Amino acid sequence: MKLKIVAAIGVFGLTTTLFASNDAQNLFTSKCSMCHVTSMPQDRSKLVAPPLMGVMRHVKMSYPKKEDAVAFIVEYVQQPTKSKAVCMPQKIARFGLMPSQKGNITPQELQKVASWMFDNYPPSNFRGGMHGGMQQVNMMPKNKMKKKYNKRLTFEMIDTNKDGVISKKEFQLFQMKRMEQKINRMQQQMKKMKQQLQQQMKMQQNM
View (cartoon, rainbow, N blue to C red):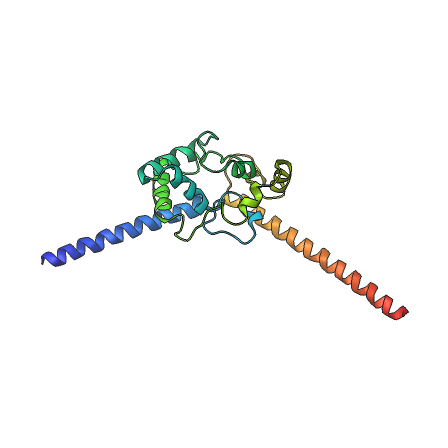
């Protein structure tokens, strides 16, 4: 009987933990994932904000204890300032300072999300931004670095109403615009290839 009770308590505890984790992950998906992706895309120029694994790497470097890290995230997300930021200066230069998320997510929701992020990110195989191409970016002259960043996406490009929050509608409109631009580029390339082919055929006919 005792074994059954212990087993039942264990199953209940595991179920509760899984439910809390799923709830926090769902909150992150609905509130944060439009900007902070959970995996590194092949085309980094499409990033709107630093990926989650990089964010949590720097958070844990500054706040290795979970309690301190969660408290920092809850406070920073509501009142972000450059003096409190833990990311590298070039990240702020590229993406800008994170806008306050007051009104978009509650402190209680932030507690759940921050705890989930600390437990799951960065993944064990994450090497960090100082490996690979980041060193090359750091070695660029400042004027060239600024020019390169200006070609990439920023939070402000998607936040069209400038309220400091990217809504689902704004993100969908942004995706549609990007798709239209991609189609236009493909059409232009096809037109150019067609013109080149016609020129080659004319040259062959004149030979």
